Length: 590
View 1 (tube, rainbow, N blue to C red):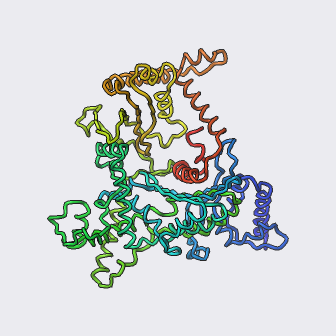
View 2: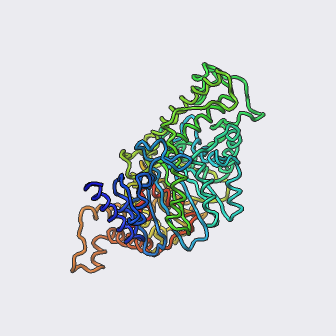
View 3: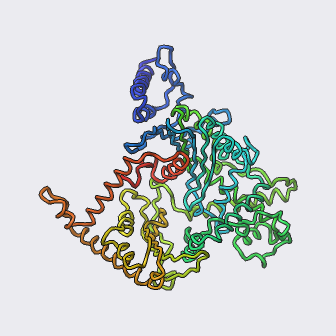
């Protein structure tokens, strides 16, 4: 063996003993797993963990991360980790590893009281990364991922399996994230997870599915057209800077995603350069030497869909959360060999052709479309600011609303005729981002003060005068590069007539907060030992309120039990992609 190898084995054996001593302690597991891959041999006399520590097994084991900070009432067990080298279909290191790690972040959670197993995947990309030539492509990609995989090609197999075993599923696309989730009775979790994971390993994205699923996206958009909240939201986007990612149309429809070329009502006649007046028309004109038809549009939409998936659905851009009554070791044995097979497709060459195409010209056209699609998606990705607060490139304050956009005159008044009978007044305030400081966010105390309903508050005054019936305040947009603070009120009939008085009261209250903030910043009295609580509150009421809010948040964090696994998993996956696994539960509460 030699002295060096003997020392290495002894050190590794000691680490294993530490793990045995700390078997139920995440810190012990984290410390043990930080050892270097060792080329050692073992004997029957070594402990069972050393006996399994061949070089292959060590390299296949994931990197265990620092424990998750959780509240005192949280009875669940957590194990955060990062997956190792990419795996092939047999669970072996793909291409020998080549030093390239999979990099997918996973949080395993054991809830012994749960009757359900749940899983969620959050991709740290959303509508902000949509190409402007094809608005809604991120949402469309979300829909397409559910339409079968190479391992499970039947489009309805996933939902059918869940419905037969007490489960359900959903997915959502926001500006910064695309999140998938499901739950099922715990005994059927492994099979459901296998079907679910294959959506990200090898989705089909067939041409026929593309043409059909765009109708589902269009139907969803049609429902939004009769929703007053959605209508106001789209008007707000229209007022924003047209070059800012916030202004993008995120839902998509048949016009923005012309993938349904087989519709009987579609025009299949060739288009010329003179007819092409949109971004998409210009791209297709350059690809097809000045002539293209609706089938070319549909084919290009699919090319962009594949390119978007290749760029954004990479392991390093994804977070997986699984929750169930199974042990953490069992959950790990389910997750690692499955999600470890997700490849980094962006590093792969474009291959394949259009379905059914055999002519050389069609193959050449498809290659041009793939190249143009990759360029389009890559450029659009630069519009979206990085999601993680640990990102190397920190986004600067980039507001989508500025006075210059409305001729330099602020505030501006927008009046919307609602479809349903309602009297609503909303005030919006563009503010610097607080994404990176969840535990020190100024908007947290602004939300508390403007939303306060006690004596002396703005709400109490407006309610007593019969002008409003409700008031809420908080961030309407919380992005890495901007915040949009919102104060929304339900008005009475008298309040609708005298809305300017409502606005005057709120602005006066805002100036009062500003004046106290200036005093608080200019003097920091602290709370000396001989200062009573009343004197301290009088010296600096804002600091006293901040301390109270922080204390209440901490108490709520420690005393609240975790929610149902179905809603808990996707929320945690998104939080982990923003704040990291250690602070994914506690961000904003400490």
